[in-house]
Length: 242
Image (cartoon, rainbow, N blue to C red):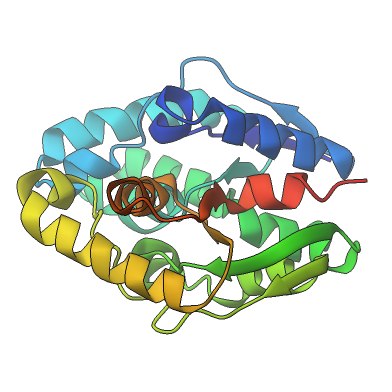
């Protein structure tokens, strides 16, 4: 099986180690992974900020990079996957050719845990884990993509790890893309509230599927001096490979 990896801005700029975990994980399960050159931002931040023209340019670039293949497109970000699947075709509502291209690309796009569960059955592979792990359910992943059970199945399947459900796991952490930049006081308050909930579980690791959320939570951890690891789910799973 071949896939094309969309790496995301956050991973490319701040968390390359997560990208390596994704590659390691997919290759372990026999997937031939390509990383198409020319990929840039999916356009989510611009779209969230109301900049449709700029978002459309990013979408055009994404489509031009990925449209020449029939392979699945996998991305370790619920917000990016949702942008492609749920918003691209609206950006081209007045351009039938580009709308059709957007829909075709959307049909091939998977958020990472969707692909791992539905296509590779990784939750049945007997991966190992360690410690106590809790999970934050990010907004676009949960509400727009409808991905709720897949991350839980993967985490619950880890032999040697204890999965601890987080109360109000789908409550916003305060990142919200441009929201964090435009309303930092509210964003910080929500991150602190999220950290309180994380710490109440007694877990030693909190994970999730979107690095935006995890970065905001990690900032709260740093400010508070809390002792808990913040890791993308790709890293948690890759650490359990034999």
